[in-house]
Image (cartoon, rainbow, N blue to C red; front, side, top):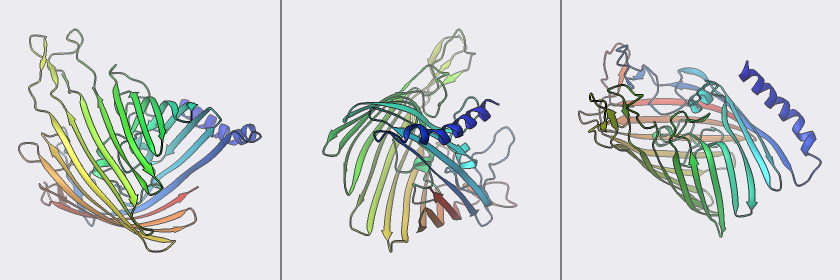
Length: 389
């Protein structure tokens, strides 16, 4: 009932706000968004991971373990509605999503609503300093949640296993001549409605932009699951160490028809703690775990209506940091994926045909009838239709 009231109130606001704000030229109210649907096939190959130790069953999905575009056959993406207001000093963004892609993007909601993608207000102190508060999409990485902004319909491992959303206080700085920066204090990553663990994550960015493109260096640091209390937590309770992530993102038009994007990221989580049999809190004795990835995004514009692009990505896991594909006995493994996509555009409509190949260092996939991972490669096809308004 509460979710219905929230959605109804937002729709009413969308209808009446142009009437309220349209009389003042210093105020701008806009409504935008997108819808998307797609066809997906993995040619009879399934993904074994993550393995469910309780049921003894593999994941059984028909896609690699990256976000979205993972439902078999003709499938729905999401409806995305964005209301934004920009005044002389103040403004807000209200961004809601409906559908499987939206639910997969906004998974860290304690209430289970999985609808609010962004919800923040801001105050502009000067042309060079703006303070934002609320829930916003991450400033790390090359790809984003909205399929209307990405060139490829499927997403990278770097995007899928880095952060999606943050809730907190973020300061945006502009120093002139294209120099920009951000500083933020936030809830742990993707804990968006409130903070149940009472620890916080710090974020930072420094960037340089120009008419041709830009480069951004990003950082995250903080405890993601809280700290242990021997008076409250049971013997054997475990808490992971602090997370650190460094991310470099860049993209430039190298000519009128050729664009090159780049993303690399390293994330590590330190040694954790546990409640010992004595009741004392001690080091867990595990090694720090991590992932590292790098991706290139060349794109060639062949006409006003059609462009061709490639994503070439390498993604590796150490010490069992993620159980998203096959790992060796040390918890190490890697994947190489190539995604070739076309973009055909007519007005706000984009059609994306896409072929993707994922090859893992260990067997991670299987065919119907198999009882364990027997293949190290999966090929998938996506045909996506997107309309942006």
